[in-house]
Image 1: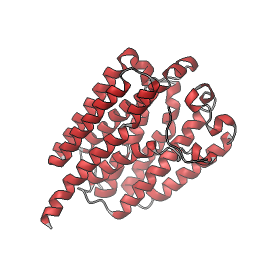
Image 2: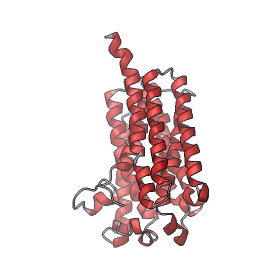
Image 3: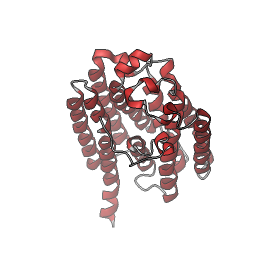
Length: 294
């Protein structure tokens, strides 16, 4: 099982996972969903820049605090045994210093928005800081990750509209259940190692029903995005994007159906395309009427 990485990536890039951009993509696409819905397809340039940079910074911060939380167990997992905190390339105190530096950068970005967005960012900070520790106490750490991922939705609406319309919670919940689904595929890669060292995950909780439950979560994702589309009066391009996403979900099942780590990891990676096609459909749906009007 391999992924493309930057050649000779240094220890700091590896700690922040900047050599492995998949996590950034998986956070960036739903961030763009939220911005495009909130701004009716025309987000301000300032918010687009702020939220895009925020994705990169907060994903990096999440990776750092995750590795700090897992520094005593990552050495027992084949996929993570060479991470910088495990090998001693970076000391725990240095990792924490980097984490707080990244949070300071995120704060500097959010201060350029408005009071409502700044207030909501406190919730996002709490979720991002605590979710890596959930795997010690619950089999649902993916739920915590999903909530952290989805918190961008109310923040985007606050930044663009200064208001939180009830329909945004369809998008919020869609991101949560989608995250649980794709992170379960990710957890299936490490399931045997996690069982040995006592780490909890949805892959372990779901057991032999893992593929069935992931499928149901993906169906729920599509239904919630469908409800979001209806609530925000979207048209054909958006719903075609949802059909494309459904086809990728089917492909993921076929990749992971044997439960081999390689196939599960490929299914996880494929979710980048899910997020992308939903965004493309949404962007085209908002752009087309504007183009016709011109």
